[in-house]
Amino acid sequence: MKIKRKKNKKNREKKRRPRGFKEKKQRKTKRRSTLSKKRTLIPFSYYICFHVSSSLFVLPTWFRKMLENFKDLFPKDIPRGLPPIKGIKYHIDFTLGATLPNKASYKSNLEESKEIQQVGKLVEKG
Image (cartoon, rainbow, N blue to C red; front, side, top):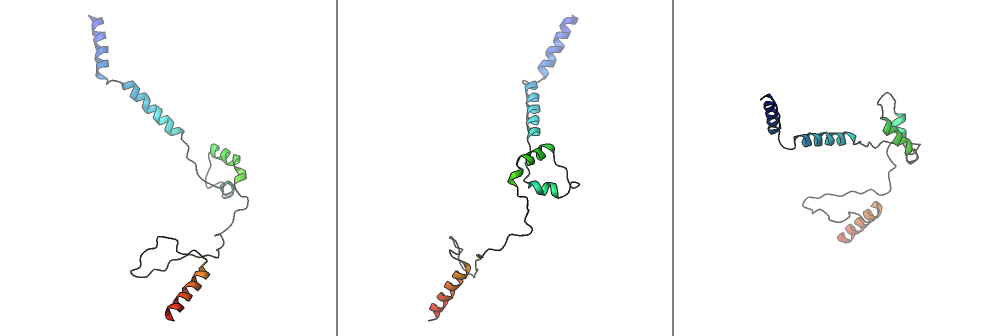
C-alpha cells in the first residue's frame, strides 16, 4: 500500500505541472543569458576618452581594448570650437501665403542668387 501511495504522489505532482514546464524555464534562462552578453557600443574618440579625466568615468576593459585596436582611426589633434563658416549660406525667405518649395532653394552661391534677385526686381520696375 505504501508503495502505491508514493507512486500516486509522484503521478499527482507530474499532473499538476503544465506540459513543457522545464522547457519554458530553460528557455527563459537562455534568453536572459543572451541578453546579458550583448554589448552596447558607445561612439567616443580615443583621445577624448583618455584625455578628459580618469576620475570622471571608468571604461570597461573590452572597450579599452577596442579603442586600442582602432587607435589609428581617431585624430591626435582634436579641433576646438566649431568648423569654419563656408562661403555658401542657405536660407529661405518666408512670405505670407507662399507655398513651400519642393526643390533646392538655391542652386548657386548666396552672392550670385542675391544679384539675380536684384536684377529681377530691376527688370520688374522697368
